[in-house]
Image 1 (cartoon, rainbow, N blue to C red):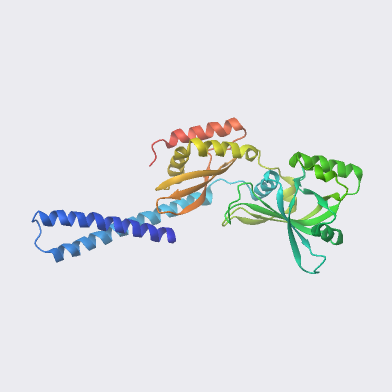
Image 2 (image 1 turned 45 degrees about the vertical axis):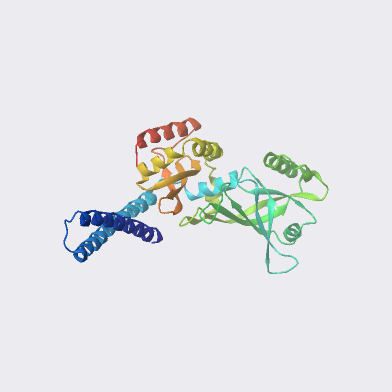
Length: 317
């Protein structure tokens, strides 16, 4: 409604300025006899123009919402698994506080994504959260997407049991995975650090942004794989944002049907399309889904699809 209100104000003001200019020209030429009558006519015309503009904007937003409702998106289990797999490697670990029984405690910790979709940690024995886990394995990990920038960005919460690894083979395997994610983490070999792992997954909560939340069944989460295209999404998005922002805006106008696009910034690219943050002439900024005409299975597919969509959108206003 805020978008609609601002649009109505903009078009109404523009219409008034236009009508006022026309009135001054006509009056100066002596073609009207009654300024009062002309003012009434001008007000009526402005109201009619503003109403038409509001109707057009309302219809455009209805088309936009209908498009977004059916736009191809990754299934929730794939989205959740992808956020976890491609996150920068730091997240909020929540534990049951040993020092204040019954209260939750949170700490930002490093983690590495295991191939099975569960997190691996190397924690210091002197840390409060380590003592919490040794007293109770109940914990959760909240992981944000690499491009997280607010409440409309993706995050996933894994709820389960985190336990210390004791078998030498398990510790060695965890060390290899952790160092693959955190190459400079030499400190994991210090004597006061130990390997921990989430061994049981009880619940998965995924939030992909506004109106995009779901509880994902642990079995579905564990059975799926992260989206392959998202692995190189950052490079594709960076290239488009640096060199082809006008093309992205044209694609939004052409495929989504939104006008007044001043800027379009690609947030991420997956096998089914792109997440784009747009800014409209009225000042509002929001994210939308820009789907591909067909799924992409490789980096070449992504390039070919974007070129195809750019050509189809050429000249869109």
